[in-house]
Length: 263
Image (cartoon, rainbow, N blue to C red; front, side):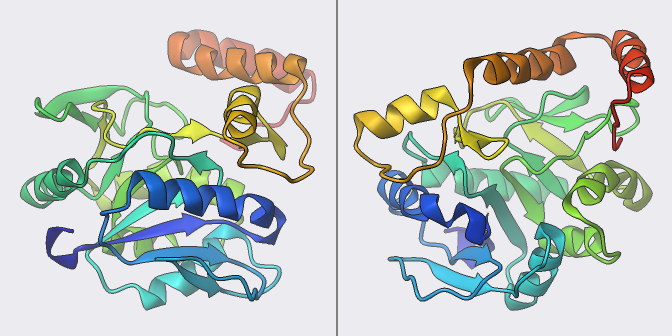
Protein backbone atom coordinates (compact mmCIF):
# COMPACT_ATOMS: atom_id res chain seq x y z
CA UNK A 1 0.00 0.00 0.00
CA UNK A 2 1.11 3.57 -0.73
CA UNK A 3 3.97 3.95 1.79
CA UNK A 4 1.73 2.65 4.61
CA UNK A 5 -0.33 5.83 4.45
CA UNK A 6 -3.72 4.32 5.15
CA UNK A 7 -5.54 2.12 7.68
CA UNK A 8 -8.69 0.21 6.78
CA UNK A 9 -11.39 0.40 9.46
CA UNK A 10 -14.49 -1.81 9.47
CA UNK A 11 -17.06 -0.42 11.92
CA UNK A 12 -19.36 -2.86 13.63
CA UNK A 13 -20.84 -3.90 16.98
CA UNK A 14 -21.79 -7.11 18.78
CA UNK A 15 -25.33 -6.99 17.33
CA UNK A 16 -23.82 -7.53 13.88
CA UNK A 17 -21.31 -10.18 14.90
CA UNK A 18 -23.34 -12.82 13.04
CA UNK A 19 -22.05 -11.41 9.73
CA UNK A 20 -18.37 -10.90 10.67
CA UNK A 21 -17.33 -14.16 9.03
CA UNK A 22 -18.99 -13.03 5.79
CA UNK A 23 -17.60 -9.48 5.85
CA UNK A 24 -14.04 -10.54 6.64
CA UNK A 25 -14.16 -13.57 4.33
CA UNK A 26 -15.26 -11.50 1.33
CA UNK A 27 -12.70 -8.81 2.15
CA UNK A 28 -9.81 -11.29 2.34
CA UNK A 29 -10.98 -12.98 -0.85
CA UNK A 30 -11.59 -9.91 -2.99
CA UNK A 31 -8.87 -7.63 -1.63
CA UNK A 32 -6.24 -10.15 -0.63
CA UNK A 33 -3.25 -7.96 -1.62
CA UNK A 34 -4.37 -4.83 0.22
CA UNK A 35 -1.24 -4.86 2.46
CA UNK A 36 -2.65 -2.32 4.91
CA UNK A 37 -3.42 -2.52 8.59
CA UNK A 38 -7.05 -3.60 8.91
CA UNK A 39 -9.13 -2.95 12.04
CA UNK A 40 -12.51 -4.39 12.99
CA UNK A 41 -13.84 -1.85 15.48
CA UNK A 42 -16.55 -3.17 17.80
CA UNK A 43 -17.97 -2.54 21.27
CA UNK A 44 -17.99 -5.74 23.36
CA UNK A 45 -14.90 -7.82 24.07
CA UNK A 46 -14.65 -10.92 21.92
CA UNK A 47 -12.46 -14.00 21.71
CA UNK A 48 -12.96 -14.33 17.97
CA UNK A 49 -9.96 -13.95 15.66
CA UNK A 50 -9.62 -13.52 11.89
CA UNK A 51 -6.74 -13.67 9.44
CA UNK A 52 -5.19 -10.29 8.57
CA UNK A 53 -7.56 -8.45 10.92
CA UNK A 54 -7.03 -6.70 14.25
CA UNK A 55 -10.08 -6.46 16.51
CA UNK A 56 -10.43 -3.36 18.67
CA UNK A 57 -13.10 -3.58 21.40
CA UNK A 58 -13.76 -0.07 22.66
CA UNK A 59 -16.27 -0.80 25.41
CA UNK A 60 -19.87 -1.73 26.02
CA UNK A 61 -22.61 0.81 25.38
CA UNK A 62 -20.61 3.14 23.13
CA UNK A 63 -22.19 4.50 19.95
CA UNK A 64 -20.29 4.42 16.65
CA UNK A 65 -18.74 7.93 16.96
CA UNK A 66 -17.53 7.19 20.51
CA UNK A 67 -16.09 3.85 19.38
CA UNK A 68 -14.33 5.59 16.51
CA UNK A 69 -12.90 8.26 18.79
CA UNK A 70 -11.39 5.62 21.06
CA UNK A 71 -10.06 3.53 18.18
CA UNK A 72 -8.51 6.43 16.28
CA UNK A 73 -5.96 6.85 19.08
CA UNK A 74 -4.41 3.62 17.77
CA UNK A 75 -4.14 4.91 14.19
CA UNK A 76 -1.07 6.83 13.05
CA UNK A 77 -1.53 6.74 9.27
CA UNK A 78 -2.36 9.88 7.29
CA UNK A 79 -5.59 8.41 5.94
CA UNK A 80 -8.41 6.20 7.17
CA UNK A 81 -10.41 3.99 4.83
CA UNK A 82 -13.87 3.75 6.40
CA UNK A 83 -16.39 1.03 5.69
CA UNK A 84 -19.12 -0.76 7.64
CA UNK A 85 -19.73 -4.39 8.51
CA UNK A 86 -22.70 -4.88 6.17
CA UNK A 87 -21.07 -3.39 3.06
CA UNK A 88 -20.18 -6.64 1.32
CA UNK A 89 -17.27 -6.72 -1.12
CA UNK A 90 -18.34 -9.10 -3.87
CA UNK A 91 -15.99 -7.80 -6.61
CA UNK A 92 -12.20 -7.63 -6.77
CA UNK A 93 -10.57 -4.43 -5.49
CA UNK A 94 -7.62 -3.13 -7.52
CA UNK A 95 -4.93 -2.08 -5.05
CA UNK A 96 -3.12 -0.06 -7.74
CA UNK A 97 -6.21 2.10 -8.21
CA UNK A 98 -6.55 2.66 -4.46
CA UNK A 99 -2.88 3.70 -4.35
CA UNK A 100 -3.55 6.10 -7.20
CA UNK A 101 -6.48 7.61 -5.27
CA UNK A 102 -4.21 8.29 -2.31
CA UNK A 103 -1.75 10.11 -4.58
CA UNK A 104 -4.63 12.18 -5.97
CA UNK A 105 -5.72 13.04 -2.43
CA UNK A 106 -2.16 14.09 -1.58
CA UNK A 107 -1.81 16.27 -4.66
CA UNK A 108 -5.20 17.96 -4.27
CA UNK A 109 -5.25 18.19 -0.44
CA UNK A 110 -8.48 16.19 -0.31
CA UNK A 111 -9.88 15.58 3.19
CA UNK A 112 -12.78 13.27 2.30
CA UNK A 113 -13.31 11.04 -0.72
CA UNK A 114 -16.58 9.12 -0.86
CA UNK A 115 -17.21 6.04 -2.99
CA UNK A 116 -20.99 6.45 -2.83
CA UNK A 117 -22.19 10.02 -2.95
CA UNK A 118 -24.76 11.46 -5.38
CA UNK A 119 -24.75 15.06 -4.18
CA UNK A 120 -24.09 18.10 -6.35
CA UNK A 121 -20.54 18.71 -7.50
CA UNK A 122 -18.76 21.88 -8.58
CA UNK A 123 -15.87 20.66 -10.68
CA UNK A 124 -13.83 17.68 -11.75
CA UNK A 125 -10.61 16.84 -9.90
CA UNK A 126 -9.42 13.83 -11.90
CA UNK A 127 -10.95 12.70 -15.21
CA UNK A 128 -9.30 9.28 -15.27
CA UNK A 129 -10.68 8.20 -11.88
CA UNK A 130 -13.87 10.29 -12.22
CA UNK A 131 -13.32 12.29 -9.04
CA UNK A 132 -15.49 15.37 -8.51
CA UNK A 133 -15.43 18.01 -5.79
CA UNK A 134 -18.63 18.13 -3.76
CA UNK A 135 -20.50 21.42 -3.47
CA UNK A 136 -20.70 21.86 0.29
CA UNK A 137 -22.92 24.92 -0.13
CA UNK A 138 -25.62 23.27 -2.26
CA UNK A 139 -28.01 23.21 0.70
CA UNK A 140 -28.49 19.45 0.52
CA UNK A 141 -28.62 17.20 3.57
CA UNK A 142 -25.94 14.62 4.35
CA UNK A 143 -23.44 15.83 1.73
CA UNK A 144 -20.86 13.98 3.81
CA UNK A 145 -22.01 10.52 4.79
CA UNK A 146 -20.78 7.27 6.30
CA UNK A 147 -20.79 5.20 3.15
CA UNK A 148 -17.37 3.77 2.25
CA UNK A 149 -14.72 6.41 1.72
CA UNK A 150 -11.21 7.61 2.49
CA UNK A 151 -10.79 10.29 5.16
CA UNK A 152 -7.78 12.34 6.13
CA UNK A 153 -7.19 11.21 9.72
CA UNK A 154 -6.78 14.75 11.05
CA UNK A 155 -10.14 15.73 9.55
CA UNK A 156 -11.91 12.72 11.01
CA UNK A 157 -10.48 13.60 14.43
CA UNK A 158 -12.03 17.07 14.08
CA UNK A 159 -15.46 15.54 13.44
CA UNK A 160 -15.21 13.54 16.68
CA UNK A 161 -14.30 16.35 19.07
CA UNK A 162 -17.87 16.87 20.31
CA UNK A 163 -19.72 13.80 21.59
CA UNK A 164 -22.74 12.83 19.45
CA UNK A 165 -24.83 9.78 18.74
CA UNK A 166 -24.65 8.25 15.26
CA UNK A 167 -27.59 10.26 13.85
CA UNK A 168 -26.37 13.59 15.20
CA UNK A 169 -22.85 12.78 14.04
CA UNK A 170 -23.72 12.14 10.40
CA UNK A 171 -25.95 15.21 10.28
CA UNK A 172 -23.12 17.39 11.66
CA UNK A 173 -20.47 16.35 9.12
CA UNK A 174 -21.42 18.78 6.34
CA UNK A 175 -21.55 21.82 8.64
CA UNK A 176 -18.19 20.95 10.12
CA UNK A 177 -16.67 20.45 6.66
CA UNK A 178 -17.90 23.93 5.70
CA UNK A 179 -16.43 25.41 8.86
CA UNK A 180 -13.06 23.70 8.34
CA UNK A 181 -13.05 24.58 4.62
CA UNK A 182 -12.42 20.90 3.96
CA UNK A 183 -11.90 19.64 0.42
CA UNK A 184 -14.54 16.95 -0.02
CA UNK A 185 -14.95 14.82 -3.12
CA UNK A 186 -16.85 11.92 -4.55
CA UNK A 187 -15.60 9.23 -6.91
CA UNK A 188 -17.75 7.82 -9.71
CA UNK A 189 -15.07 5.42 -10.90
CA UNK A 190 -16.29 2.29 -9.06
CA UNK A 191 -12.94 1.70 -7.35
CA UNK A 192 -14.68 0.19 -4.32
CA UNK A 193 -17.96 -1.43 -5.23
CA UNK A 194 -20.10 -2.79 -2.43
CA UNK A 195 -23.33 -4.71 -1.98
CA UNK A 196 -25.41 -3.07 0.75
CA UNK A 197 -26.31 -6.01 2.97
CA UNK A 198 -28.62 -4.97 5.79
CA UNK A 199 -31.22 -2.26 6.36
CA UNK A 200 -33.36 -1.83 9.46
CA UNK A 201 -31.54 -4.83 10.94
CA UNK A 202 -32.78 -7.16 8.20
CA UNK A 203 -31.02 -8.67 5.18
CA UNK A 204 -31.90 -7.16 1.81
CA UNK A 205 -33.05 -9.58 -0.88
CA UNK A 206 -30.14 -9.21 -3.33
CA UNK A 207 -27.43 -9.98 -0.73
CA UNK A 208 -29.64 -12.73 0.72
CA UNK A 209 -29.73 -14.45 -2.68
CA UNK A 210 -25.96 -13.97 -3.04
CA UNK A 211 -25.24 -15.41 0.42
CA UNK A 212 -27.55 -18.38 -0.15
CA UNK A 213 -26.05 -19.08 -3.58
CA UNK A 214 -22.51 -19.15 -2.17
CA UNK A 215 -23.55 -20.86 1.08
CA UNK A 216 -22.06 -18.04 3.18
CA UNK A 217 -24.68 -17.36 5.85
CA UNK A 218 -26.16 -19.82 8.31
CA UNK A 219 -27.53 -17.35 10.86
CA UNK A 220 -31.14 -16.52 11.65
CA UNK A 221 -31.25 -12.79 10.83
CA UNK A 222 -34.61 -12.10 9.11
CA UNK A 223 -34.98 -11.02 5.50
CA UNK A 224 -36.61 -7.62 5.02
CA UNK A 225 -40.19 -7.73 3.65
CA UNK A 226 -40.44 -6.79 -0.04
CA UNK A 227 -42.80 -3.95 0.80
CA UNK A 228 -40.28 -2.35 3.15
CA UNK A 229 -37.42 -2.81 0.69
CA UNK A 230 -39.39 -1.25 -2.17
CA UNK A 231 -40.23 1.70 0.07
CA UNK A 232 -36.56 2.20 0.98
CA UNK A 233 -35.57 1.93 -2.70
CA UNK A 234 -38.10 4.59 -3.72
CA UNK A 235 -36.97 6.93 -0.93
CA UNK A 236 -33.30 6.52 -1.87
CA UNK A 237 -33.96 7.20 -5.54
CA UNK A 238 -36.21 10.15 -4.76
CA UNK A 239 -33.41 11.83 -2.78
CA UNK A 240 -31.17 11.57 -5.84
CA UNK A 241 -33.67 12.47 -8.58
CA UNK A 242 -35.99 15.05 -7.03
CA UNK A 243 -34.93 18.71 -7.01
CA UNK A 244 -34.28 20.28 -3.64
CA UNK A 245 -37.51 22.34 -3.76
CA UNK A 246 -39.65 19.24 -4.29
CA UNK A 247 -37.87 17.42 -1.48
CA UNK A 248 -38.53 20.36 0.86
CA UNK A 249 -42.27 20.31 0.05
CA UNK A 250 -42.48 16.56 0.64
CA UNK A 251 -40.63 16.88 3.95
CA UNK A 252 -42.96 19.67 5.03
CA UNK A 253 -45.95 17.41 4.44
CA UNK A 254 -44.35 14.49 6.25
CA UNK A 255 -43.44 16.68 9.24
CA UNK A 256 -47.13 17.61 9.56
CA UNK A 257 -47.83 13.88 9.71
CA UNK A 258 -45.40 13.51 12.61
CA UNK A 259 -42.31 12.29 10.76
CA UNK A 260 -39.04 13.56 12.29
CA UNK A 261 -35.98 14.46 10.18
CA UNK A 262 -32.67 14.81 11.96
CA UNK A 263 -31.33 17.08 9.22
